Length: 149
Image (tube, rainbow, N blue to C red):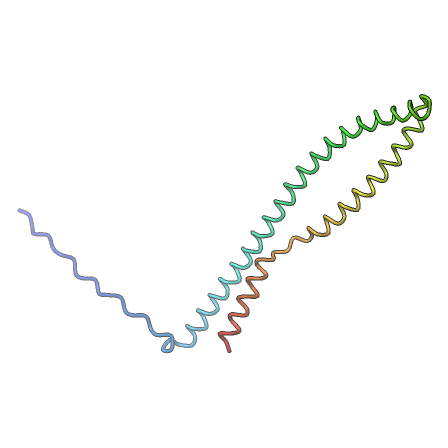
């Protein structure tokens, strides 16, 4: 013989939340503290992510730029060696040393120009500052100040 299935007792509905103006001050302070702590943690995570992203882009660009520089340098060595011999034959009746000194002077001028350009580029990219996180923190501060007044 089987017993008829019994229905479980009904679940009482949840109590409505206490209106904010009726909650104890300690609960309100605890909630504000918890929310502020969460906000600060999220701002820190945003700053970390932003700086990590910028550093990754800088490293990737630097690696590709270094590889391009190595290959360009190797090609330039061959080209300039040929130009030095051409200068020697056309201007100095086959004497090679003046052509190589002229080329050395050209190299020094190009190196000075490249160093100047590199210095300007590095100054523009450094330091990697989390601009979005700072802007977000300023907006949050302004919002909290408006609500407090």
